[in-house]
Image (cartoon, rainbow, N blue to C red):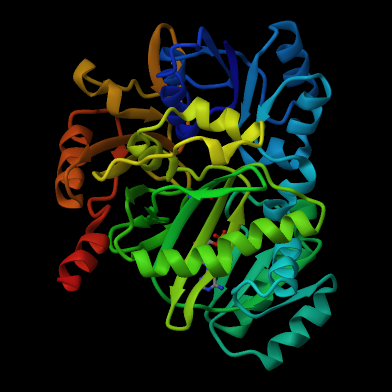
Length: 424
Ligand code: AMP
Ligand code: GLY
């Protein structure tokens, strides 16, 4: 089979490594891929948002199956465009990808179908949004409606911060049209859990739970990033909580999308907060999470491509989706300075014995050398019996990789480990 994967980050590298385990896979193209993915796939310099070029490429190469991994092409309708040319895809149609593409849509969906989430109001008028702040308690959360590279969420500690956030989104348009509408919502507290789920609109199978670490600094300090590391499974996500989520959140969401005529097929990501009043949805994503994928897929024992094809063909109920009972930890190595200004172009040295554990996000090949090209450069995943061993193994591998200015958090998984100890 000829496979095409749209995207070029660590998540796509993890997907590619997983599907290559299937013996029927002859060739994998990555659009655009990156300098590390180039070890495992043929990289083609077509951007993930260049839908017409993606479709032309797929037709020309007679692609048998396409996987559209990032949010942008999904929200832009890449799957619809590929399907129109007869190319089967993994990923939701445009009308279902809106569950991530518009927070106003997802909040209204949850309200209509009684899916637990933070209280909220939606505004298309800046002054009305600011006036509303008179009636809320602090902190308060301000979110741009549309996609904003994960930066469209401001947790305002003061009213002035909330006003500034609203004005920058609605008047200064820092996120472009994504800020035409804003959601202002209640601040929730509790441990966060990421749950990715396969669904074909009839069946929904949650994958192993995970925990992201979004802040740049140890002990969850500093600026928000695209994710500095992940562990799986997430110890806060007990069997009882999983049962509640399945009944009150996951199945109701699948059914709600069906009822709206927006059947979701693909990977549905539930960003959950385990609040004192029970699990609530913080966000939906219409795709695999990054860097959650880098711990979830290495623990998947079933064949990923087989499961994906079953989703596309709406026979997910017929396949087995089995996860290892081990634990995984992924440490992200970033360019020093990220998520603010950072230098790039530094050669990356990875010992051969470590390569299988590495998912590359921001690297390119220059003069035959693999050099850094992004803020988050790569993720290093280890699997072991128990979380503590997985964390130790992941850091032992991370320390063997070098590039100038390399930065990583030293406490990935520490909070989860503490939860495990307190539980005993
Ligand atoms: P999002 O992009 O919606 O996932 O938001 C980014 C991060 O902001 C989440 O992972 C949470 O840590 C935080 N966040 C979002 N919404 C809320 C909320 N209502 N209450 C508390 N924290 C929130
Ligand atoms: N890790 C969060 C995301 O992929 O959006």
